[in-house]
Amino acid sequence: MLSEKLKAMKYSAIKSILLVDDDRDDIYFFSNALEKLESDIILLTAGDGEDAFERLKEYTPDVILLDLNMPKMNGVTFLKTIKKIKYLKDIPVIIYASALNVFDEERMIGLGAYAAYRKPEDLEQTLETIRQLLQLNFVRMVG
Image (cartoon, rainbow, N blue to C red):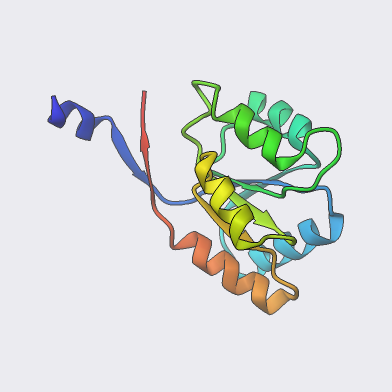
């Protein structure tokens, strides 16, 4: 039984990211930093939770970076919702927000987020944050 579970697990490095954020400047900085790292990572973007679910109908990313404060569907509602959807619940969701304190971080982890990062304030910090993210390896159930 245990060996069957181990066979169903897949270690995955990040090859694609869905960045859910309504701030165009933050999206630009993240995209620019990713290009500077010369990575082959596919970056998809969505302006809020509703838009993100539309994107997820077309493509399943390796990880979702999620802002909390957005119009239409905010990050908390998105996180609660995605964790209830069988075919999406195992996608690692990382909170990526400007206004993030210890209490928010604990709450988001409790709701199923994999980790939480405070948005960097400049390009150099964004590069360092992306480097940290790319070092994460996720274990996901497959099939």
